[in-house]
Length: 128
Image 1 (cartoon, rainbow, N blue to C red):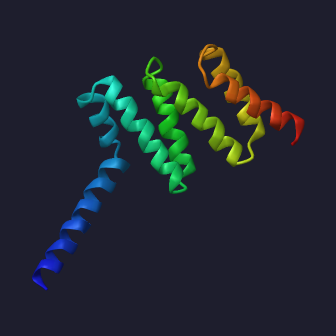
Image 2: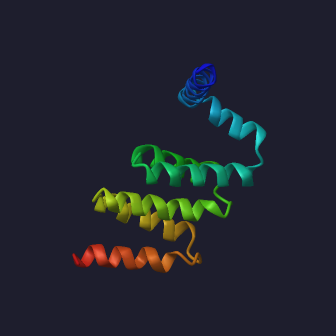
C-alpha cells in the first residue's frame, strides 16, 4: 500500500512539474539553451506530431511554426510546414492551406514534398 501511495505522489509531482514547466515557457528556454539546433528542431517536430495525434491541433500548429521560425535551415522545417498544411486541411481552412502552400513552395521550391502540396491544392481547388 505504501508503494502505491508513493508512486501516485511521484506521478502527480512529475505531472505538476512538467505542466508548470510547459506553461511558463521554461521548456522552450531549455530547448533553446541546452540543445543543439538540429536536436531542438527534431524534438519540437516530433512533439508537434504527438500533439497532433492526441488532438491538440492549436498546440501542434504552434510547435510546427516554431520549428519553421527557429530552425528554417533544418531538415524538419519543410516537414513541419507540410504538417501545418495538413492540419489546416483537416480543419477545413482552405484559405490557410492555400496561403501556407504558396509560402512553402516559395521557401522550398526544390523540396520533394512540393509535389504533394501542389496535388493537395489542386484537389482542394477542384472541389473533389
